Image 1 (tube, helix red, strand yellow):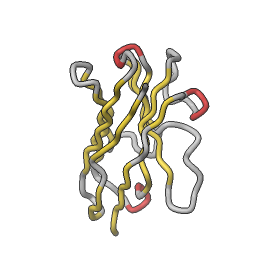
Image 2 (cartoon, helix red, strand yellow):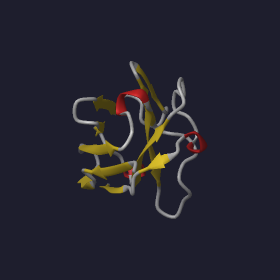
Image 3 (cartoon, one colour):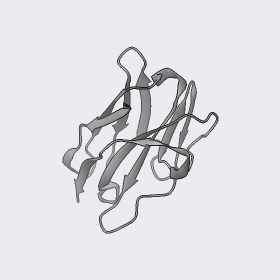
Image 4 (cartoon, helix red, strand yellow):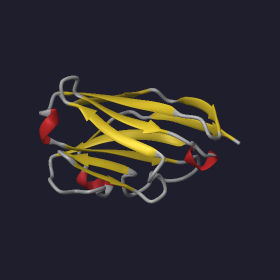
Amino acid sequence: QVQLAESGGGSVHAGGSLKLSCVVSGLPFADYCLGWFRQAPGMERELGAIAGIDDDSITYADSVKGRFTISQDNAKNTLYLQMNDLKPEDTAIYYCASSPLEGLGLGNDWAYNHWGQGTQVTVFA
């Protein structure tokens, strides 16, 4: 059974930092494309990932480029998202997801077939 479990969300003031983790089990972690998505309050989940990683290929959405860093530890089957210089507009539920497809870059949500339950990030002005 495939499971993805996020942690590390919380509340910070603008300019602060958080690091999200996503522990993945039940699939060959190193062989999958992984991504982070988010859903702002009152909105649908964004169609495209904000950060994606596939082997050594890393891609960021313009909204987070230069502030967020995605990484993975294959020994721990864990995906990370280091978020710096957080802004109020980053407030959202953050989800990790996995895809068996290659070369996704960011990819849209339909390309990902396993999802975590989400972790809340709140940024105060």
